[in-house]
Amino acid sequence: MKHINLRDLEVSRIGLGVMGMSAAYTGANTDDAESIRTIHRALDLGVTLIDTAEAYGPYTNEELLGEAVKGRRDQVVLATKFGLVSHAGAGLGSLDSSPANIRTALEGSLKRLGTDHIDLYYQHRLDPGTPIEETVGALGELVAEGKIRHIGLCEVGPETIRRAHAEHPLTAVQSEYSLWTRGVEDKVLPTLRELGIGLVPFSPLGRGFLTGAISGDTEFDETDFRRGNPRFTGENFQRNLRLADEVKAIAAGIGATPAQVALAWLLAQNGDIAPIPGTKRVTRVEENTAADQLRLTPEQVATLTALPTAAGDTHDEASLRLMER
Image (cartoon, rainbow, N blue to C red):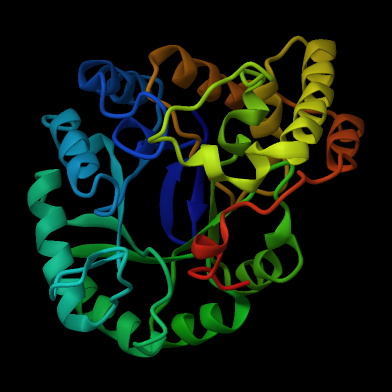
């Protein structure tokens, strides 16, 4: 597996998002043994960047990852997130990036993950009640104490990135980015490149659409957030299935899977991007990591880039309100 630098943090250029092992997707939290095997297989294949958050579960995803990396902590660039759980009483879903809440959140994450430091600690969503300078200043103190090594933000705009980076250097910003979710290209990605900050795309496979595994007959259980996601409902769903078929056709023409093509397109954008495709299956992590070896021609990249973006918003209205647009 090739490595890249997110500013000064070296990571595998394909990471692993483990949220779906414990939350949000059909089948989550049903086979921890297979999930742990998947994490171990990723490490065996050279994946170093593994991403979780205290909000996933909540807490259970960090516990699962902590169990999986026992005895292998030195192989992992461990990334987790704070700020979507208020530990002052409001609980899950309450934005709180106050310095006191950050320290409480961090101590919990360290315990659950079985480690004495977090390699990359993200603010999960911007807290409008706490100035970003105050939040990042508190994180800088934790860097000085050795409890975290690098600071990241999630789903923020250029102004917030600049203000935060001026307070303490940011290592990475995590945002949704894929073949058919391209919003970061306009302002966020140029800002990151100007400042030397890396990008960690989540949902690089379109929450399953770009794997080619979703069809008109696919059913999501009641715990799966895709049941209410605009891209997976009504006419948007049918249009997006047709878009996914176009990716399938391109993949078939070069002897690769749709997921590998989608990841290879992201990797072709520059050497400062480390996508974190999520899966809970060994076979999928093997498929995804093989994209490291796939080289798209300039013509293939151009053809993929010309595909239209997906129909529908990436999240429901409540979730979108938590993101800087």
